[in-house]
Amino acid sequence: MDEQQQPLPVGTGVTLDNGQTAIVGYDGLVFLPSLQDDNRLRAELDDGTFCDAMFSFDASAAATTLGPVVCRAVAP
Image 1: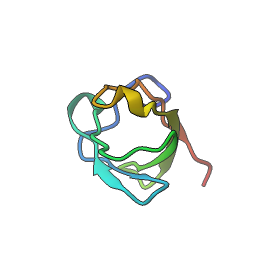
Image 2: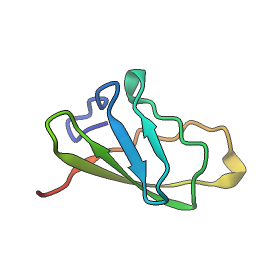
Image 3: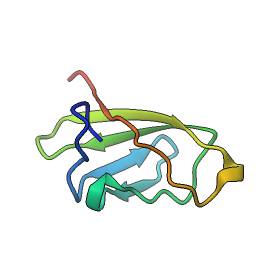
């Protein structure tokens, strides 16, 4: 979700620091099959700007929905 608490648009591309990529689906959901303990995700928005989100993952809670995670605007 963005800083205004709205889901990122469907089709927004996201990339994790480990190079894994995904696409935002309905309601701002993203499926990421391989996560680290600590993760940083970058989304490229329709207007060409970017936002970053950081979140932790507990591997013992696999197949769990995380979030909401806020994607904060990155200065150009």
